Every structure is written in structure tokens, then in C-alpha cells.
Amino acid sequence: MNQFVLLASIGSDLAETAKATGERFGVETSLFVAQVISFLIVAALLYKFAYQPILKVLEERREKIAEGLANAEKIKQELANAQARTQELLNQANAQGNKLIEEARTSAAKILELETQKAIVTANDIISKARQASEAELVRMKTELRREVGRLVVNTTAKVTGKILTADDQSRLADETNRQLASN
Image (cartoon, rainbow, N blue to C red; front, side, top):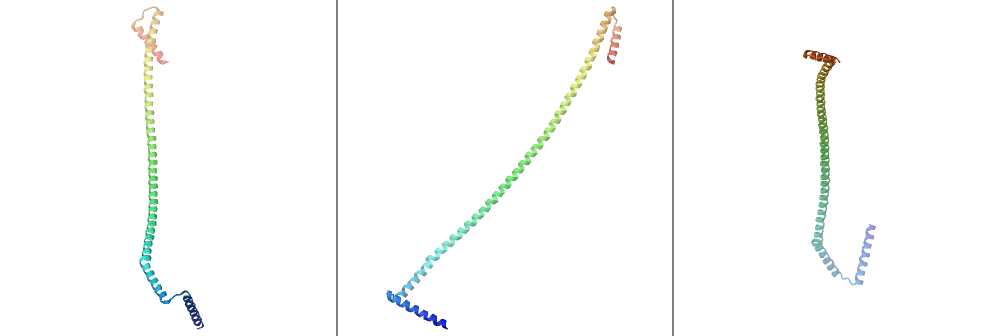
């Protein structure tokens, strides 16, 4: 209860102070009430027709900014995804390129091996043919040499003995000379 008495006394003191201040400055209560009512009407009209539309515009801007930030984040994410895909495609292309290079190297090595084998076979054929030709030439030269030696033996024998040899003698001497040469 004491609290109510205290509040009442404070309230009455405040009212008396306000009344004394109003009288000292020339405030009239009816005019004051009219000004308060006018102020409340103006404040209500400003709130309804100015403050709420401004709040609405600000809220729309806030939403557009939030939407723009969300779109920027989406675009940033899409850009990151596109860069990742691009990097992945580059890596795949690089891997394919390396694979093709390796296949080309392998193919070149196989072709080199085949060409080397062909060259070796061709060289061996040439060497074999050269040997055969050399052997044939050697046989021909030996045969020719035997004939020549046989002829020289016959001529020398004829000159040494001083008589003319018959065809049978010449043939016999050539055959003996050829047999002796063949045995050596």
C-alpha cells in the first residue's frame, strides 16, 4: 500500500509541476490537445502513406539484393563446375593424346623391327647370291685354268720332245694334268 501512496504522491507532484510549467510558458490545454490530435493524424498519415511504402520498397530491395547474392553464388558454383568439367576434359584429352603418342611409338617400333628384318633378309639374299656367283665364277675360272694348263703342258711337252703330238696324246696329257690338278 505504501507503494501506491508513494506513486500517487509522485504523480500528483508531477502533475502540479507540469501545470506550473505550462502556465509559466503560456500553454493552454485545449490548444495543446488539438496540437496533439493534429500531430497524431499527421503521424498516422505519414506512417500509412510514406513510411509503409518506403519500408515496402526497402524490403523489395533487400529481397532483390538477397536474390542477386543467391544468383551470384549459383553463378559462382556453375563457374566452378564448368572449370572442373573443363579441367576434366583437358585431362581426358591429355590422356588420349598420350595414349595416341604411345601407340604411335609402339607402331613405329614394330615397323622399324619389320623393316630391319626385311633389310637383314635382303642382305642375306644378296650375300648368298654373291657367294653363289663367286663360286660359279671360281668353278668357271678353275675349268678355264685347267684347259689353259693342259694346253700349256701339251705345247711344252711338244716343244720339249720335239715331235708333234696326236690328238689322242694331247687328250691323254690334258686328262692326266686335270686329274693331278683336281687332286690338289
